[in-house]
Image 1 (cartoon, helix red, strand yellow):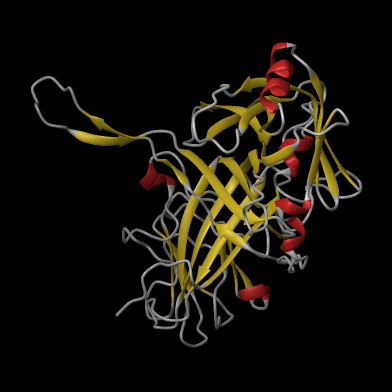
Image 2 (tube, helix red, strand yellow; image 1 turned 180 degrees about the horizontal axis):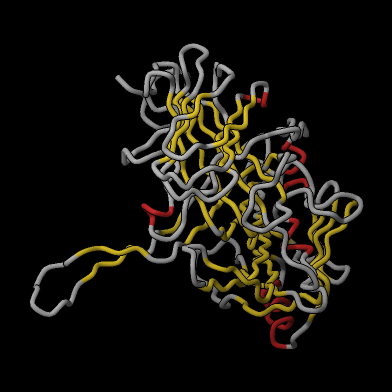
Length: 414
């Protein structure tokens, strides 16, 4: 019996800055989202598949065609550190939209999730399933606060990505050389193959439709990274022709442009090279319980009682299709920084409504154990109804504050 996909085994989730948007970095210095990831990779999108219908002379769909792709990723994790370091540089993905200055290009990330099993696969020795995203723009971050939650603050970052691909590498049951071959005689570029941690690494130069065999034997395989866009479909097998890199359609684990019609699969699983995987962050997430935070509004309390404070940063984006690729260009628009706040007090509804109708604006500061997130000139843009119903023991007022200014938000360590 095979082991079905689950979230209970070994999962590694990392991100790294790209020097060229949409291209995985060479020798990447990987970062963890957290030592406690709650949900990953949150891959949503589509291949732009549309029916070819409404053809004169036919009442059925004639065919299906594929257009531009649309990808997003969402990762949820427990907070273990502030969003920036002492120099103000982002060290958490949410730090990037919070510190974006619009004078430079928003930093893009390569995001890789790996799920590992030690059983099953083509050789009975397990498999590694990867979801790889390149050109990932961190465009949204949610920082919730609920004092009734015993769990530490659970952050959520949302990415808009240029390209996301899924791969499965079947792990060999004993060390073996690997065969690499293309279905196109035009393919003569390098493919990097690595084991865990890059302890065994070899760069194979494709020889078109002629099989190339590695000189090294691999006891495990953790990266297969093409160095160019393939025209043909690339297959990686053991010496007996059994897939190492899963080829679901039977064409190859890396699909070429002559099959796709537009793009060849040049993403692959990034090699580590002389880079490094992330060490544990190590801080106690209990330090980041909402109960241990505080807030103020213009030097005064948001309310006599603050029952919730959810801060959000969001960068508007546009996606535009371009000639010659299924990838879309992702452009960054305006930023909105807001806080949804639940308060109560002796005359709290009066206080919040006066703030709203008088268009009061003050700095709203959300104070963590090691830093402050400040919404500049926060204006109460939406206020809840005043409604006293029989039996109510308390009245909780829900308000939304939005920041404005240049910048509209600051993040500083303390």
